[in-house]
Image 1 (cartoon, rainbow, N blue to C red):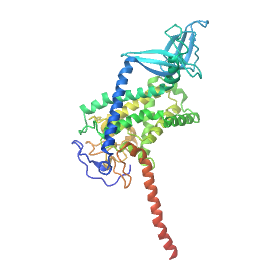
Image 2 (spheres, rainbow, N blue to C red; image 1 turned 180 degrees about the vertical axis):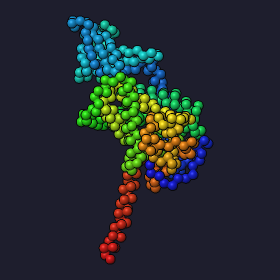
Image 3 (cartoon, helix red, strand yellow; image 1 turned 90 degrees about the vertical axis):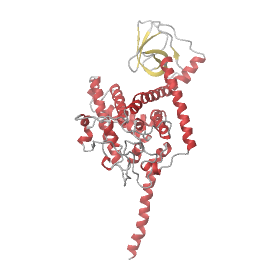
Image 4 (cartoon, rainbow, N blue to C red; image 1 turned 60 degrees about the horizontal axis):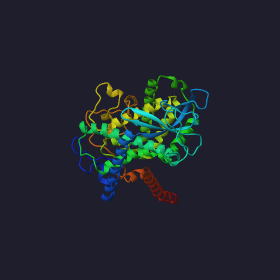
Length: 445
């Protein structure tokens, strides 16, 4: 991580003033009117989202999945069919008059109050433009035409990926709000003025939404296409792993994720062309759980491609890889949380604590290029990048090179890697221009 001469920071156990570190002193905040408008928009969206989350749990939400198996109870076409859908192998019994084959798309409704119940709503057969409604168990399906069928089959069913992404977003927001944020309030490691209703809080929430909604854009398509191409052109290293018990595959997936992220993270700090992309994650001077999602879209895309490709080619089953990734992601939220947790004794050599990861974000000379791990600390200790002082860091953030200061706004963060690239190209061009006259003078002499 590039550094320059640092100013004397203030102790982290006191509320920090409004201008702390290079980012706050040199960056220009957006106009008050724009910041206020963003706060209102995000607040309204959160209120509507939380309302939708509560309502959907009791009224049910719809998910789109694939049919994996179809079996009839007898040879006659009128006999009921048993349809199994992808995921946890949920099975439904429907009328024999419904045309359904493996590979068709199914729409199911999930209702949790608090135990979850599943209902099969419709089947999207082959390349049909609208869904066939499914009646209650053993009964005939609903009418094949009408306003509801057209609305469901042509509008609602194709939009289910969006609905699912919104649901995941709301679940993530609820998790952050009720678990980690509450822990930060009760057991804070660094006591400071709350971010609530501040522009920095608005920026954090924008990054939370970006993390969930990015894959609905062309960026998500690019990730899927790139991952598919890599998997199609690279062999599976250990095909037999998918036959291991699920718990052993999950543990192996955790190790693979953390090992890959350690080296990717280390290269992002030590390679000058990767650092401006990752630097967005280090722009905050108040490290907490929301710092986890403060990532440039390029880093999100590269991380998604690398993680999915490596685990799949390693030979780990899809279900185990998914469970392992969710555990890894939640632990990543945990180590960014502003809680006073320090692992004692040998535990600090095994696992990364929030205290240890805060030192990765510290703006101090001894913390430069240290503590890259997320779950397992032994990578840092083994490869000589561990640091575990007996005190909290004095400050967080970045000491920027001249001309490479990142303004504290979402749009400025998006263009920051290209800003740094332009500044460096200009420096090199200027250096070449300055050397050229001197070289001509030497030739003339």
